[in-house]
Image 1 (tube, helix red, strand yellow):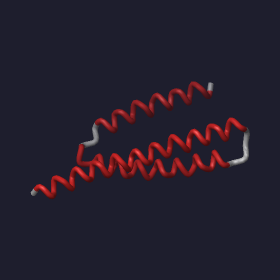
Image 2 (tube, rainbow, N blue to C red; image 1 turned 45 degrees about the vertical axis):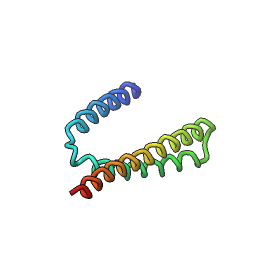
Image 3 (cartoon, rainbow, N blue to C red; image 1 turned 180 degrees about the vertical axis):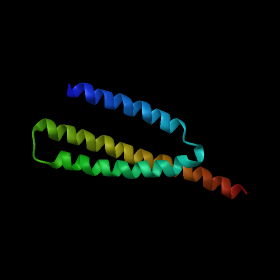
Image 4 (cartoon, rainbow, N blue to C red; image 1 turned 30 degrees about the horizontal axis):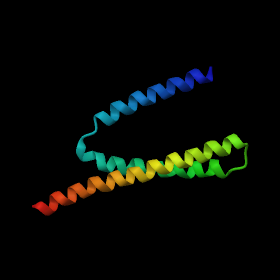
Length: 95
C-alpha cells in the first residue's frame, strides 16, 4: 500500500513540476535555476551522509549513486546558469 502512495506522489510531483516550469517566463529562469542549484547542493550533502554512513552494502551503493547524480546536477546547473548569464553580458556589451 505504501508503494501506491509513493507512486501517486511521484506522478503528482512530475505533473506539477512540468506545469510550473512551463509557466516560468524566460527572465525568471536564471534566478530560479540558481535557487534550484542551492537545493541540489543540499541534496548533495544528504547523499554524502547516506554514502558515508554505516549501513548495508546496498545503502552505501545507493548513497554513492546519489552523490554522483547530485554532483552532475549541481555542476550542470551552474554551467547552464553561467552560460545564460554570459549571454546577457554579451548583449550588454553590444549596446
